[in-house]
Image 1 (cartoon, rainbow, N blue to C red):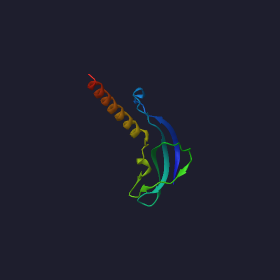
Image 2: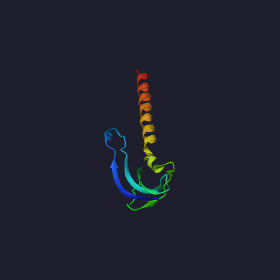
Image 3: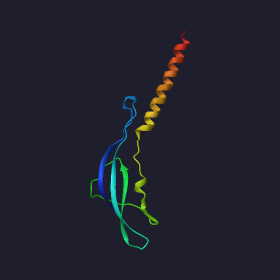
Image 4: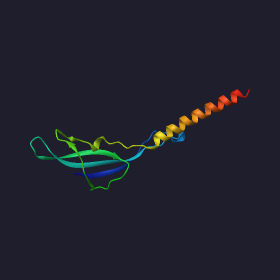
Amino acid sequence: MATVTACNYKVATGRALAFGIPSTRWFHITFNYWAPNADNVDELHTGELTSEKAMHVGTLFPIRYNPDAPHETTQSALEPTTSRTPILMIGVLGSVVLSLVWLLILRGCY
């Protein structure tokens, strides 16, 4: 089990909101967990993850770690997912296709 030690809200910068690109907002969570070392003595390890949902400090959650390298966890590899990106791309591509079709129709009128 891991214990949340810090939870900070992060906003990705560098996104041009004027062009309709959504900014990615997520929580940066730091946690501690105990894992045995090579001598079978428990050691305290620290890990980080990102999440779309906040976790209160002191919250316990299950975690899996690599017994050969206890500092490697499955939680550390998680990244926030953005579900609006495919919809945004379909909208942009659809707009381009419709604009080209409209220009072809107008060119055929002359």
